[in-house]
Image (spheres, rainbow, N blue to C red):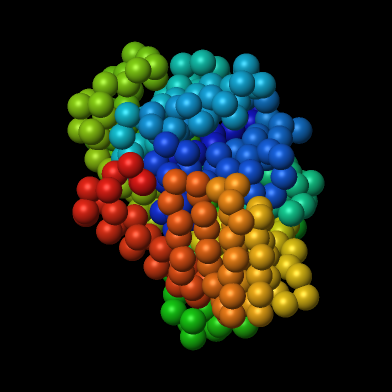
Length: 350
């Protein structure tokens, strides 16, 4: 079964400010290698899928095009505005159907995740596609075996084993409080929901047509996915794929469970935890001098020396045009900074 991959690359990564901006988001950053997260995502899936569609924001066009110049076969769709993930996925399906015609498996991936073991991940994708070939009406997810209680992720509750390593899905759970997250992990019944989906193209188009007809009918009006009219696109209902499809579908839902070193790098703290630190638990990049500091993260892209003295759990980021000083433990609240900037119309820093 041919695999068409959809890479969603439209987020602005507000909790990763100031490196992540509206015109150059987290997926266009080099966080772990010389490659950006987007390029790492493309390279990771290339062994099993040559048909790749990237959906991103028109604001990020320059950053995306500088990332993908070496992949001329890729299809890129620029959304003139954000309408959440359900319209985004329907738009990709419309494009794939017009291009390929015949049915295929569709794998949906976020562009900004870290995966330590790409081979294990690809093996899980293959297992999911194999199951889908025999169950083309089903909708699949890749579930991640949790390594700790985590309040920042949604969860998938496993049902019966339907095939080795493949489970039916009982429920999807929203991000829990810590006590609930601990119970989820201790039970062994739950997986992290990484927002990775797998389904057949025709079956999912049918799902949209039957249960989200307004979105389906609007998108299929587009004769081309080039230069989409903003007013037209703004008229499409904004809703997530989880709410529009996964929580309402009557189709059978399955999950392929595995552990492949996954992290959504959703905040500065989650990034810090993946990096190699010195003996005091510090990570630094650039011309940085840490004196009597521990458990801190300092990134300096300014070219000028930065000295940090007597700090514990410090987050300091000099992006060249703006400096952020915060506590690492405030990682989930960094989005308040971008909300403040927007409210006060400091738009050049967004």
